[in-house]
Amino acid sequence: MEPDQKSTVVITGASSGVGLYAAKALAQRGWHVVMACRDLAKTEKVAQTVGMPQDSYSILHIDLASLESVRQFVQDFRASGKSLDALVCNAAIYMPLLKEPLRSPEGFELSVATNHLGHFLLCNLMLEDLKKSTAVEPRLVILGTVTHNPDELGGKIPPRPDLGDLRGFAEGFKEPISMIDGKKFEPVKAYKDSKVCNVLTMRELHRRYHESTGITFSSLYPGCVADTPLFRNHYPLFQKIFPWFQKNVTGGYVSQELAGERVAVVVADPEYKQSGAYWSWGNRQKKDGKSFVQKVSPQARDDEKAERMWDLSAKLVGLA
Ligand code: NAP
Image (cartoon, rainbow, N blue to C red):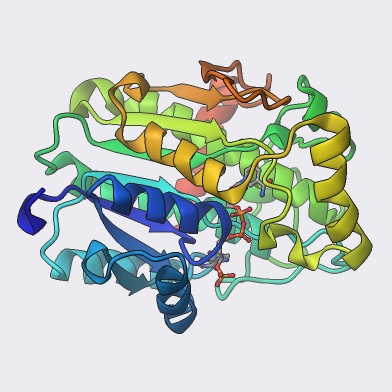
């Protein structure tokens, strides 16, 4: 592909783990990757470490916890003159040991602000850019996870996600509120709640915009990538045992390379053009494992909840 004919994908959180290897896999397929990251020097270093050719990527600053930074990112992207053919919402934080909530610059609980609200704003703003894409079918992909779904084996471990009546969002989601359901702060549940919001956002984007824009909206569970830095804020012993357990007991372990490859096929391959789909390769990873469209959790397929989540999120990020 000639450089100016390259399709362009923006990947958030491409400085580590699944996002980095998705960037590598898409660069290998001839895409230009805009690595949307908060640490530019780190991103440059890891892009070189995994062997991405210099002209296959550019790096643009975004701090997803900050709504102002998300808006600035969109301006900077537009100023680059690139067209947008795919957007991958991948960045996330998981801080299971926190006793008290951390806050985003706008005062929201930090994990929901980063994983959901920042991406929610980004998706809404970049819809305009995707609409202008000349690609046959532009795509917007949001990373999901099995832990959003208590109906799946990997999602049964408490605490379970529960958005409740979204009272916490309705009441402004700032001090003293730290959970979407307005209840007591539970950091693991906050992460899972944010991932339910990610799936609801994808489904609501599909319902609102697929038909009118032709954009494909989808999510995926790439498998348990137990050794990414996502677990850096967990007990050191957990960080040792978890990958071993997933490799030898559950059989759910997936390498960062394979997870990145899975993101890349959902972004680029014709078989993954179904909009509104949540792709999975199952919990037990077989060598010849095929992907399939998986049913999402009862909460994540609740249309009323999706609409309420959408309206309240739009208000919180200043879109309403
Ligand atoms: P990871 O290695 O920790 O990567 C997370 C990325 O998000 C990093 O690039 C990080 O940047 C970035 N990030 C965090 N906060 C940010 C912020 N405020 N602004 C911009 N970027 C920010 O995690 P991962 O395991 O690859 O997870 C990636 C995605 O896969 C997540 O959506 C996660 O839910 C999903 N997932 C993971 C697994 C798994 O088993 N690991 C399973 C299912 C789904 P820094 O490098 O600067 O920290």
